[in-house]
Length: 248
Image (tube, rainbow, N blue to C red):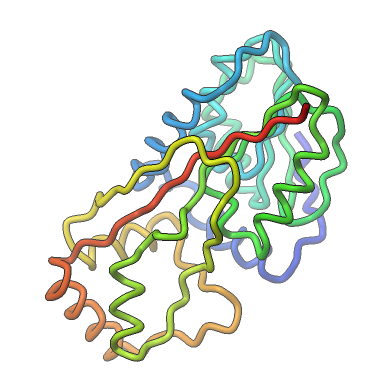
């Protein structure tokens, strides 16, 4: 396993540190992410012994599906956070000789070529330009290779965004573009109220704001929570999209 940290961008390093700090407790709070990984795994192609690259493996929520689906495959599991990779390794069957681990910044150019399958679940929305990255990744596929992803869709957290805009407050939520080749999508409301939503985000390390964001004051945050509870009953919707790209 290669855990020599590559040179990360300032943003990637900050996100990796935030998620890495939650590695030991991540799966206790990541029920939604586990469900997304399970749903994405249903789209895995019928390859026999593919060369697979996973970006943002985290603690292995999707990796376990890959290992079970492709026992003859060569799996390279990567993440920007070394602590996440260590957790992923401990969650997989270490007797599988065809699994390797590597610290990798998904926002940087990927060195590997002729891959049969590239997968990533709930990671693309953290990148500065996910559409550019998808284009770059597609070029890394072998003929007939497949790129599968699950990520936040453009309507994610619509209620929270609406309240912040109405109240004249800044939003740190990532800018979420329309994604290409979407094959499935879903709208989920897993939290009972706004505070539960924010606690979920904090528990899994998912509160890193976009660049240039000025955090809300405690008073403004309370005002936004009250407004979301009043206008939307505390509901905050997750919009998840699943995509599939293939190289001819």
